[in-house]
Image (cartoon, rainbow, N blue to C red):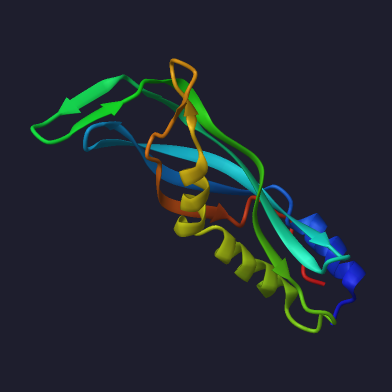
Length: 164
C-alpha cells in the first residue's frame, strides 16, 4: 500500500515524456495511399482533487504533401485538393482520464500500464486523427483521409522505473 502523495510523486516522476510511434497512411490519389510515421510522447498527470490520472500526448509526423488530383467516372467524380508540404502536429492533447481508487492498496504500476494500453490503441488514435485537418494550398482545411495502422510504445527508453 502506498499513500496518495507517493503515488502522485511516482507517477509524475516516472511517466513523463514516454515515447511512442504511430504508423499511418493518407490518401494521395484515388484509391492510392501512402504511409508515414509520427513520433510522439505522452505524460501522465495526477489530479489529486478529482482523483484522476490524465494522459496527454504530443506528436509530430513526417512531412506530408499531396498534389491536386481529380478522378472522374461515369457516375462519380472525386477531387483531391492539394496539400502543400506539412506535418501532423498535435500538442498536449488529452487522450484519456482515469479515476484512481483510494486507498491505493493495489499495484499502481499495473493500473498506469493498463491505462496506457487503453489510451494508445489504433482505435483511440484514429479518433484523434479523424479530427485533424491539413491546410490546403488555398488556405482552406483539407481532409487527407488519415488511417492509423499501428501504435508502438517505447517502454524501455522513455522512463526511469525503480520499484520501491
